[in-house]
Amino acid sequence: MTLNGALAGLVAITAPCAFVSASSAVVIGLGAGALVVTSVVFLEQVLRVDDPVAAVSVHAVCGAFGTLCLGLFAQDQFSPGTTGDGLLFGGGMKFLVAQATGVLSVMAWSCATGFALFGVIKATMGRPRRARARQPGVSRLPGHRSPRRHHEGRSGRPHRRRGRRA
Image 1 (tube, rainbow, N blue to C red):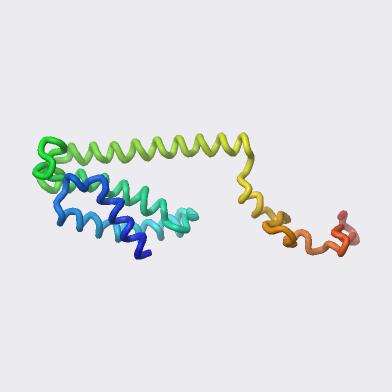
Image 2: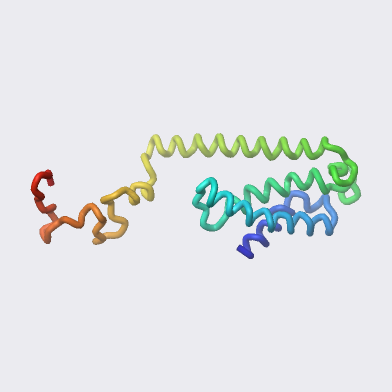
């Protein structure tokens, strides 16, 4: 998790790096480091998202956080005539609203294209192999006996039980 905190800080400062001061960069990085921990817990325990390396938390959540921080911490003195000042430096809500609009539009586009892509894959190729391997009776490894096959005899054919069909 420590490495994810460091990565989260780097991801979050990527968007605003040319427009914020060094002290603002530290604040953004520390905020992202704390945010990644809460995001991982939320995704795993509340939403039940299986993300073993916390890629969604590091890249999506902290990337969006860093983009929004540009609307808060930007200072026109670092790149004159480009962004203006952020909300915390007297620039008003206009730039923060623009950043939030960008984050929401990228999120909407990503979700729409992701659902469409995986819908086409599911329709054309069926369920992923990994999902089929989790079904009862399907072996994951060659020679492995799954729970459904534990009643087989040495010949590999199921034993006949009384009152049930084999």
